[in-house]
Image (cartoon, rainbow, N blue to C red; front, side, top):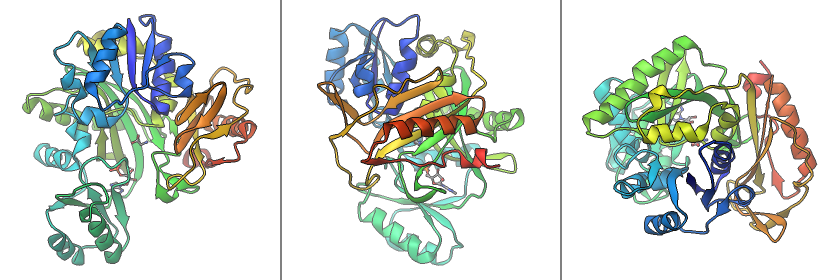
Length: 421
Ligand code: AMP
Ligand code: GLY
C-alpha cells in the first residue's frame, strides 16, 4: 500500500523510518515532511490544515492509509473528515481528541470515573480565580484550557506568580480564554506511558521520559522537548497493571459512554508517587521526542500494527520490543524556545558513519540543492540504542560533537536521572 504521513517534525521522520521497513508498504508520502523524510519518501508541500487538499493529493497518489503525527489536525477533526472515504486514517476522532484538546474535558472525565489525578477547580473569570488563589497553598499549577504546544502550564511557587499566570491566560496569551484550570501540585517522578488502540482493544506501546525544560538540570522555560529516553526507569508490572486498571480502562470506557471509541496512539503523562500513578495529562498522539526513542526499539512491523488498528484486529497483532536503552538528544537553533534564526546551513551530517542503533532523525530541516538548512527551533535528533543509557548518551554526544553546529545548542545531561543514580 501507499502510505501518507502528516507532519514535519522528528516524530514524523521516526514514523517514516519505521514504516519504510514494513512488508506492507510500497511508497511513502510526507505532508509536508522535512529534509530527512525527503531521503526515504516523497515530500508533498501542502497546508496540512486544508483537509480537502490532503484528500485530493492522497487520491492522486493512491494513498490508502494516512498516519497523523501532530495533535492539531486530530483535534480539528481530520479523522472525521476521512470517515466515509476509501482512505484509512490512523488517529482518534474529534470527540476522542478532546482528551488533549480540552484539559477541562479530561478533568471532568477523571472526576466522573474516579480516575486518579490532581484536585482541580475551574474558573470562568479572573476575579474568582484570584480570590481562590489568595486562600491557596503553594506551589500550585495554573493551566490554560485548549492546545498551547506544551506552553500553557505554569507551576507557581507564590501567590504573585499565580496571579500573573491567570492574568496572562485571560489576556489571551494562548488564544481567547473562557476559563482557567487551577490544580493541586503533584509530587513524585514523571513517566510517559503509551498505548495503541483499535477502538476495541488496546496494547501498551512502551514508556519513556522527556526533558521539557531548555536548560541543564531541568531549568529555564518549557520547550517541545530537549531530549528523552526509553524505557522509563519507573515502570514495573505492578505499576503497569494499576495504570491500565485505574486510568486507561475507565477512560476508554468513558469515551464509549459518549458513543465514541479511541483509535490511535494515546500518550499518558503520569506522576508516579510511591508506585501509584496520577494522571497529569493525555496527548492523543505519540510524543516528540519520545517517539524517536521508542520506535527504534520496536521489532514488529509498524505498518501491520497500524493497519490492524484501522481494521479493529489489534488483538491478534504481536508487538515485540528490543530490550535496549534508547536515548535522544535534540539539537536546537540558538535562541529556542524564544526567537531564533531560520535557514542556517548545517554541515557535517553526510559523513557521520552511523553504526547500527544510531540514528540521525530530522525535525526542522530542509535541503536547498544538496545543502542542509535549519527551518525550526528543534532541528535534529540524535538517537542511540545500546545496552546502557550511559553508553547511548556518550555515543549521541560524540555524534553531536562531529556535527559541531555552531549556530545551535543541546543539553548534555539528557537522562541524568537514570544515568547518575
Ligand atoms: P502538561 O502540559 O499538562 O503535561 O504539563 C507540563 C508539565 O508541567 C508536566 O510535564 C509536569 O512536569 C508539570 N505539571 C503539570 N501538571 C502538574 C501537576 N498537577 N503537578 C505537578 N506538575 C505538573
Ligand atoms: N514531549 C512532549 C510532547 O510530545 O508533548
